[in-house]
Image (tube, rainbow, N blue to C red; front, side):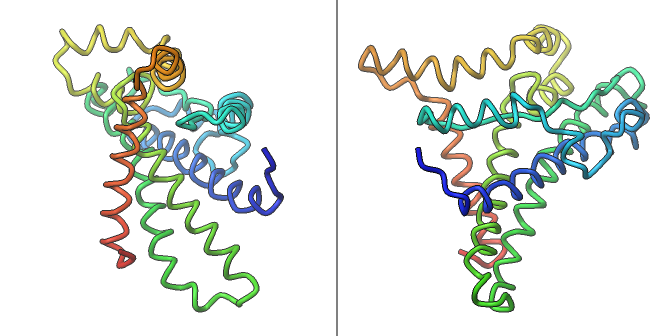
Length: 226
């Protein structure tokens, strides 16, 4: 696959911003709600180097792109949170988990609103700026929706564990060590097996794509871009 320097230049900054703000939001809300674990480790920071995971942020997405995977995803270094230190552990866990996707939606809205300022950008920089805005919007919506899947350790899984009755929350929480393997199976292995059997088993990607489309359309309408 031929990836140009221009393509890299319009993807790298939006990706770093999305990941950095997502993880910093988790750390900040945890700190405000009583747990200073992430604060002491310097994770309440806008320095992307504090949050990048070499495999999850660079290698895994790169391999998926080069292998023409139907769905590309990755992850940053998880923000360490000692939930027992939170003021109200079960409820506050939900707020900490929601902070990441919420800030991604805020960033997507800001990027969409920024489109209205494009006439103010010099002509020779307009395309590069527009592509950065577009990719910022796309990446942040994707991160917000993907992370709300109800599978620990994704944010949606943490929200589900915090809100579900204990009889359901406990077995769901025990899936956390295997969460990434489950995701890889659902998003990559299952579709490949289905293709070999002549079946379309790429159901999760289809659901995610539909949700991303609905949320993107709503945000573009709200910001006057529809």
